[in-house]
Amino acid sequence: MKNLFSNIKGDAFGGITAGIVALPLALAFGVSSGLGPEAGLYGAIFISFFAALFGGTPTQISGPTAPMTAVSMVIIAGIVAANDGSVEKALPAILTVFLLAGLIQVGLGFLGLGKYIRYIPYPVVSGFMTAIGVIILLTQILPSIGYYPKEDTAFVEQFKPQAEEVILENILKEEAGEGILVLENFKETIDRAHQITPEQILKESQTLAAKEASGTVGAIKVLPRALQNINWLELILALGTIFIIYGFKRITTAVPSTLVALVVMSGIAYGFNLGYRPISEIPGGIPIPRLEMFTSFSLGSVTPYIFTALTLSLLGAIDSLLTSVVADNMTKTKHKPNKELIGQGIGNSIAALFGGIPGAGATIRTVVNINAGGKTKLSGMIAGVMLLLIMLVLAPVASKIPAAVLAGILITVGIGVMDYKGLKAIPSLPRDIKFGPLKLSSEVLIMIIVLLLSTFWDLIYAVGIGLVIASLMFMKKIGDLTAERSDVKSLKKEKAWADEGTFPENLKEEVFIKHIKGPLFFGSTSDFQALTEQIPNTAKTVVLRLGRMQYMDQSGLYAMEDMLQELTKNGVEVLFVGLLQQPRYMMERIDIIPDFIPNEHIFKTFDSCVKWIKDNVKDEN
Image (cartoon, rainbow, N blue to C red; front, side, top):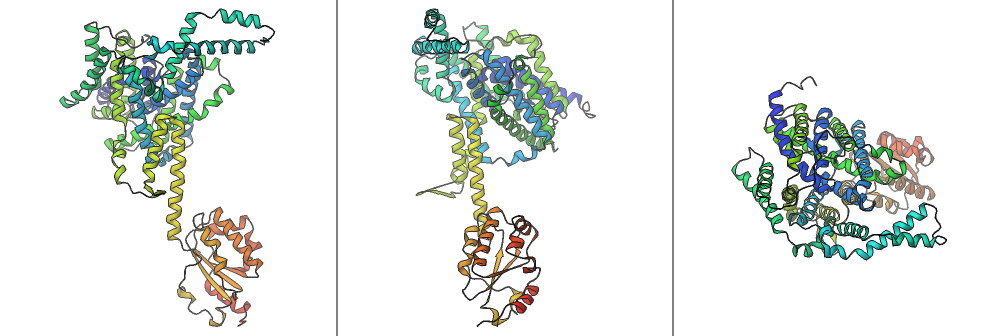
């Protein structure tokens, strides 16, 4: 904190610039999430300020990001659908998930897990980021052409029979909850059914229509219908926004092209009174804490969302720490990963208390801050304050922004967030796995699985499945590689080691010497288990030279136990030479030592083993 005011001019300019850049994205992410533009602004304000204040990357600017918003959008849609399509009813549960995600991030930081985030496999991250881009593109097609399913009368009409069924089911559920025996009070049930109004049916039909068209699958389903009902004004506004964002960058990057597009297209739409669809009204005044989540809090209501919150927190951690690495490369500094997680967690937790959507370190905003002169935590804090001032002063003006303009902004975000580096590498990656006659790259397979599952099923489960598959493939690769370099193969003809040249010739038929080189683990146990088949019938003593067996896992331990049991049953004595600390510890845990191998049969050197053999093994041939 002592360096907080060491670069006031640069931090002020960097923070103000980053705040201006963040404004259109915050509004767009808020609208996209389903909670409204104010949720995006609140998230940007509080996360930017508190993540900078408590975080471990001095130049980082935080706020809602494309990956976090995409996951939040899925979470919000699921919880809203479970609450009769009412955002207001679902809001306490939604904010509870966001609060839990922030608290989990704080916990991850205190536990020192920040340094392990880098072990997330690249194919999982690549597939996920590309899926985020695809999801944003697909879900923004409808608003960019001005099609809103709830307002399509013919489409909504299709759901009226289902809406009546849903309303009747809700009546029966309410009666069951009130303890009314439906069969004995059937007249009351009929009376309630007759009280259902056309307005109620219409409202429920609109909710079902919106649900049907939600997400990527829903957007694809209604796209043919949407293309027959294009609002050409909205489409022109969206296309104009996209054109300015990409075109203005060619003129100069000194002024953010996203902000230019927002101002120009909104100014044209409002100035010429074009009859466009504005975003929902942004409330003015100081943000007020949303404490209703605590009044409706119960362990049972939160438990189903713990895994969801954990996934959201891990995504935020990855997103933030990747941005921290970018900041390190630009500033030649070193961030503190665990402290950064604590800062991000505090920022997300406070944002949730005020109804904001969660976020993470934002790469573009961080780069803008650094290029504009930001060097300390003060820059991120100023960015948050800047957004708060804009909201307090310009909320009525911002409420006039066309929804199609924000859809156009989000389309460019979706295009930009996809991992083109990973996609370009697909043809050149080695094809290291076989599926029948096909040879595929394991990295490409993981990336495609995560991409498809994230886009068309569930972002959260897709990442989990991707991690499991990546881990299994990694285990197989390492197992194959280690087994290839390891020498525990039972049928391999071995050369005698240098110190075995003086072994008594008359005892070579009675004593069998085996070298174990490399770890005895799950990848090499099948070869090791066949060792007994290699031992000649004349051998009554087996010497296992273990000085190069550095490691033994549980699979190797039980393979060793099985072999020793077989040899003991056949009356063969086993001697260990050069047994190292870790394998010995493992064998002592399950009493292989001393039950099968007494301590007097364990030798530090081969010479001491040979002396014992000369004294105890007879030449029977």
